[in-house]
Image 1 (tube, rainbow, N blue to C red):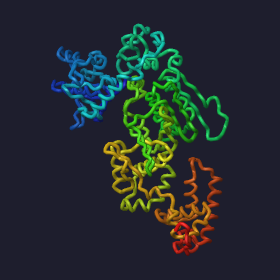
Image 2 (image 1 turned 30 degrees about the vertical axis):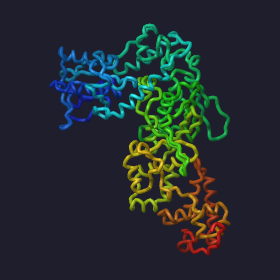
Image 3 (image 1 turned 90 degrees about the vertical axis):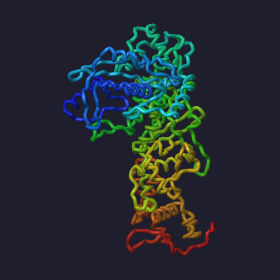
Image 4 (image 1 turned 60 degrees about the horizontal axis):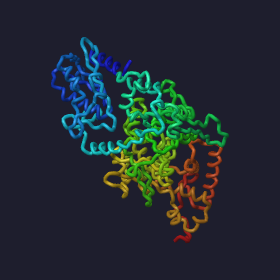
Amino acid sequence: MRAIDKILANLEKSIKSNVYSPVETGELELKDLSGGEDWQELYKTICAFLNTKGGIIIIGIKEDTKNKCFKFTGFSLTQSIEDKIKNFSNLFTDKSGASVDLSDFISNKLVEIKPFLDGNVCLVFVENLPEDKKFVYYKSSAYERQLSGDHRINDEKIQKQDELIDELRSAVELNLVPETTLDDLDVDQLNDFIIRLNADKKLETLKSDIPSALSFLNRKKFIRNNTPTLLGMLVCGKNIFDHLGGKCELDAYFEMLEKVKSLADDQKLYKDNIIPLMESAWTFAFSKINVGVSVQYGGSAIYDYPEEVIRETINNALAHRDYTINRCAFLRIKNNEFIEIRNPGRFRQEQILKDEGTLKLRRIIPIPKAQNANLADVLKVYKRWEGRGIGMATLTNFALNNQIDIPYYRIYSKDEIGLFIPKGKVLDGKTANWLKIFDKYIKKKTNGIDLTEAQQTVLAYIYKSEKLNAVEKYTVNLSPDNNHFDVINDLCSWNLIKLLPQSTPEIQLFGVDSILKKEDFTAELRMIFGGEYDTLSLTLKKILQAIYLHSEYSMVTEISANLIGNFLYVQSQTSPQIDLKEFGNFKRKVRTEINKLERKAFIVRKSEGRPNYAINKNYQRTPSLFD
C-alpha cells in the first residue's frame, strides 16, 4: 500500500470517529475547493512544493483547526475544474516573469481522482524541482514549504539560489565521459531508477532498451549530445570502473585495537555504480561495529553508532565528493574507537575558520549546499539524500543528543578530507567528571541553578571542540541560530561560555570560561609551598594538584584517596574500557603517595581519623626559584 493510501485510510477513520490528529506536513496539504475561493491558495502550495521537496495535495477534505476536526466536502470534476488542472504547469514563471515548462513536475498526468467515503477526493502529486530550476514564481512571488505552511521566499535566499544556479552551469557531474557511447548504459539499472521514481505515482514507463529511453535520459541529464554524462554513468553505466576509475571506488578497512593479523574480511575494495557502492559500504560498516539488543524496542538490534549516522555519513560522502579527482574514497573503522570516511574534496573557503591565536581555533561553518546538486536530485529518488544539509546538521544533533561523541574533520591535503565519528557521547564519564569537579564554581556563576543535561552537553561540546582544535582537528561550529538557541544564551548570560573576539556579525564563535579550562595550578601551589613544591616527583605534584582543584572548585565534602585515585585514573584513560586489575593497582599507588604527602605535611586531615584531606595552607613556605 502506498503511503498516501494509508493517509487517506486514516483520514477516513478520523472523520467517521470524529477523532482529530493533524496530518499536514511539509509534504502533505489538505485543500477544500468546494466554495471555489481557495484556488489561489492551491497555486501557492503547488509553487511551494515545487520549490521545496515536492508533496501531495488532497482536494476535498477541510481541516478545521479551530474545532479540531476534518470535514469531507468532496471533489467533482467539472469542465472548468478540468481546464484549471490542465493549466497547472503553465501558471508559474521564472524570476524574470517568463513562463517555465513544468509538465514533468506538475500536470494533469500527476492528478488522480479516488473514491472516498460517499464521494471522491482529488490527489495532486507535485515533484520537487531540480536545484538548477529553482525558484519558480506565482504572481511574482516565490513560495517555499516550511513545516505545514507556505511562505514567501526572502530576497537573501533567492540571491543564494541564483548563485547556486551559476555554479550548477558548470556542474562536474554533467561532464561528458570520454570514450563512452549509449551502449555503455545499462537498461536494467535505468529501469531500477524508474521503478524508484514511480514509488508514489507512476511518472515514467519502463524502457525496453536504451534507444527508447533517449528522451528520458536527456531530461534527467544522464546524457548530452547522445553521450553519457558522469551522472548517467554513476547511476546506470556498464563496466563503470573502466571509464571512471577511482570515482566509482570505495576501499573499506577494519582495524582492531590489538595488533593482530588482518583478515581478508577486514579489507574490501568496492567498485560499482553509486547506489550499490553505498549499499556495500553500509553492509561492511554494519558487519564490523558492535551490536547489542534493545529490550525497550522489542529485541531490535542496536549498534555502537546510530544506524542513521552510518548511512548518512556514507551517503553524504559519496554525494558530496569531488568528482574531478580520480581517486577512491576510504571507509575506515577502528574497533571501539571511531569511524572515518576519507574523501577526495575540499571545503569551500568560506566554510573554514582557522585562527592561530592563543585559542587555536579550527572550526567548520555549516553551509548546507549540495556539492553535486544533480547527483543529489537522483539520490533523493533512491531516498539516499534528503537535500536538507543533513550531513553536518545531523551529526551535530546526534552529538548534542549524546548518541555519538563530537565529530571532527582532518584536512589531509588541499583536496582530501577525513570525517571522524568517535564512539561514545559528548557528555561522557570524563566530561561529567570535569563538570562535577567545577560544580562549586559553576553554581556561583548560575546563582545556585543546576545545569540541565542540554546545558551540560553544549558546554561539553564547546570544551571538547577547543581541545580538538588544539591538535588540528576541525569541529562543526555551534551558534545560536543553528543549535540550541536558548541553551547557548543561558550559558552566555552566566559567563560559562563567551563570545570570542574572532566572531563576526555573520559567524559567532564561542569559547569556554578560562577557569573551567584550568588544569595547571603550579603557580598557586608554589605560593603555598615555595621551593619545596619543586622537589616533589611528578606523581606527587599531580596528586597535590588534584586535591587543590577539588578543594577550591568542587562541592565535594570529602576528599579521600579513593576520590583522587578515581579522578586521576579517569583523566589518564584514552579508552572507554577499564582494566580492573590495572585500576586497582593504580589506586593503591595513589593511596601510598597520598600518605607520603601527609607525612611531609603538604596535606592535612580535616578531622582526626577520617581520610578527608585538605591543602595545608599553613605550610612553612621556603623561597622558590620562581619567586
